[in-house]
Image (cartoon, rainbow, N blue to C red; front, side, top):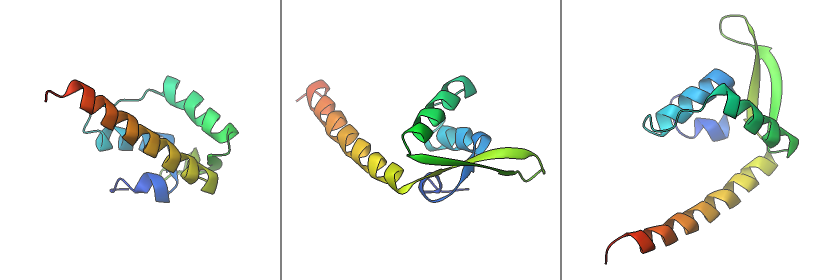
Length: 96
């Protein structure tokens, strides 16, 4: 997986997901398993992601996560809210 859109289009296991978050944030965000598992569980409970067991490249059992249609809608809504909030904050903290 090499593009930021991989998170939206593909199915990722936990290790790849953690690596992609780090890469996409230019090494600014590092998410530990202790934070990621509860977040993924909540997303799954909300119906925003699906989790399926499968085999990893090294033939180990791994859980893979994928966005659902409802997850894509929720992501679009949250992204729009974040964009509005960050734009408003930028207006306040930037010198005129």
